Length: 185
Image (cartoon, rainbow, N blue to C red):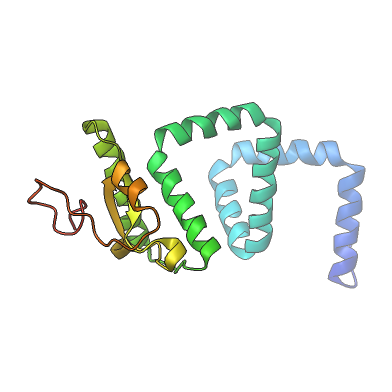
């Protein structure tokens, strides 16, 4: 039965679907089980042709999962914070820099370099008795950015004593390898 325009056809299809919802869904499920590769291909094509809808669908799906698995998500987040303190500290520093208006967009390589300072501090904390932290050579509150050339790994006591003063780079006594602070680049 030909339709005068596409709108009439879509309306008729919707009406048919709602009248026969159970049988349509059953046939769709059977087809997807019988043709998994083609189903996956069609999903990729749909996402490519509908990026906004795909993004919204992904967001609502994630929200629904978090809502239905709240305790599981909380447990995962607690464990993630314990396992990845370097990632958490880096994210906090970025938020502080944004708050103070000193944040600059970084390339993936620069972000990885920034995160490597936090990873090095974490590794030093596991190896040595002294606790190490990442310090901003020019403090964020004084206009310094959260960039690789403004970061250094220093002992926590020294950083606490320094506060937000402009003391420059940390000179580690007895360490001949320390060219610029403790982090060798």
